[in-house]
Length: 505
Ligand SMILES: Nc1ncnc2c1ncn2[C@@H]1O[C@H](COP(=O)(O)OP(=O)(O)OP(=O)(O)O)[C@@H](O)[C@H]1O
Ligand SMILES: [Mg+2]
Image (spheres, helix red, strand yellow):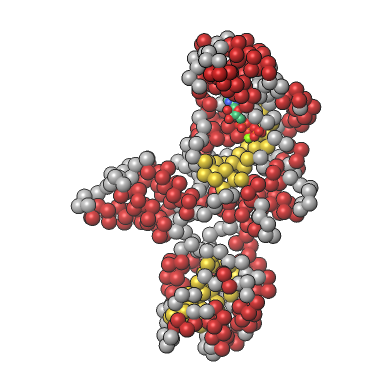
């Protein structure tokens, strides 16, 4: 039984409440429920135990032991507020019952607490005592985990979310003496999608917030809701919500990539159930070639939230936490879908070798499993400038929809990059001989061209001059482009790309 339970959990699927029932009926003494929604969890558990006519109690460190449904009232509940005392009491209690322990996680370091829980678990056949741990996060020590099953609560379905929104709308309208609130069905549909993956309580709160600002549910409410949802997921540090996505018009060249994305635009929109959503791309190439910029533009053109996974921040000094961070980040991306998940500089987390080669291996395993099994509309964009560091398993055909090589920009693309970066600085491209500049900057990356434009503006300001062709040319001539310094590396990249990747530009 335990194996199947763990299998289900490892895939990060939300169980429905039938699973909750099933697990409470197993012969395992310990149940772990990790949730942020304690109120609803306690409600569900109370229902469950009442239906099963099972006496149950709830314990908190502040209030002690209270009946949950059929449990008997205790004379002085607060005298059981200490973890060791309540566990000692349960151990000696001679009738069957379930004990729901909220926030036991801080006490899991104590040898005595662990021993008491183990005593209770070992005596399960006799005593029929079930301990249900409800915490936002709980790591059971190894000696206890063999007695335990873990459960996730199901989140409200789309229909339920719609119901909650309607209920909140009615509440707002009644309060403000309005007959109804303004919205349209497309926006409402998007709001439901945005609220998926949140607890009942949070759905209610965010839906009310979206209505209460102006008595309507409009497109303008959606980014706020997405942002609030992201913040509720508490993934600070590992997964970042990128507010400033780019426009494709900010990206010069990369024509093949742009066309590829354009062809898949429909499939990414949530209204197109019949098309398989694309899974993701890997962009690799020289530094400063515009890979990160392209990742931002993908989210921009598809109008999807962009989540950036910080590969370096994944690593945690505690064994096991690194993988857990990745699992949680992927789960959150699933919950935020449709979205673009950007793994910038993916080699930083997955490069094999080094002292601790076990962790990158396990991370890779977690990532590959998620990539092959996910059902959500999460488009993954991985970027890398050191393909030699990436594990071959990741590069195997079929992992990504496509692997794109971002080469140095050609003459026309350099031309376009100059135009973009001059315009960004309020300089009229028509006033410059861009053809000549593009010629002179052969072998430059987009970043180097941008840098040359920036240097020319500084030089102009220092001399109280306007930016001119001469200043731009001087800036170009003073630059030693990477393609010269790293000619060999670039040749290697091209050779690798020639039969394994598609050209992005
Ligand atoms: N094709 C392009 N069009 C317009 N601007 C570009 C282009 N390529 C690069 N740039 C400019 O260079 C900057 C740096 O590029 P970006 O960070 O996207 O490169 P990268 O390939 O991710 O580099 P790295 O490998 O160092 O991460 C961009 O923010 C942009 O201003
Ligand atoms: Mg980059």
